[in-house]
Image 1 (cartoon, one colour):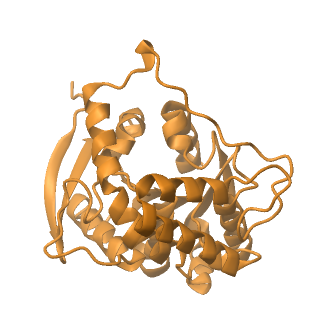
Image 2: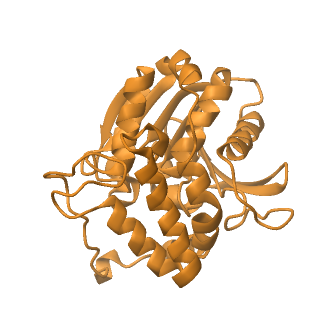
Length: 299
């Protein structure tokens, strides 16, 4: 009997980079796109949970971790990353069968661009909280927030930039998230305690965390502003709305990414699905998140 959770690794040459990718399971193709500074390792638990029903693939985005660029790093574009996903789908689904795609945060922007330009290659797209600031009630405030995050990184480094972003995305009660709507009684940001011995990361998890932390400078300088500033093709997305599910976290619906996501769904007549946790729900409880993703994909 085949172990569906066994990982098959490979390298894929794309325009300007070489992508490290990982595949588990068998069945219809499901591509999990890492967001933020994450790489394929962010999906280890989710992929293992879903490998009984799908061929689950993830990868390190170009310029991150084990996916080197052919030249120096420069500002990244969602369209380029979407083309990388198309190449991966072509590799893993050579018969032309459509693939399902999941993206969260910045990678949800990639998923939207992919759906707008390649709907025939896709069976379903789940875009969890894409921070498309152009759809916010006050887009200028959203753009200013992410520009301030990048400037904090340039002046003071990663920690200062992450603090600036946390403050902008999770304001005090009664204030308004940048570019969004009043937070009201929305959830306060959770404080992460040091792991207990039972919660201590495995060596594999520690290696993943280390890689993702090393990716933060590229994310903050070259990904955050170009991706959050992406202007979606609403006409194309409305035409493909039957394939689109917009995900929002049950604990983050008052905050900027979820506000933008729900406004996107209204504009293109897309379905909204609530997921457990907040903006990073897939790391807060990956098994619960995987179970909800299974429901959404099979609905």
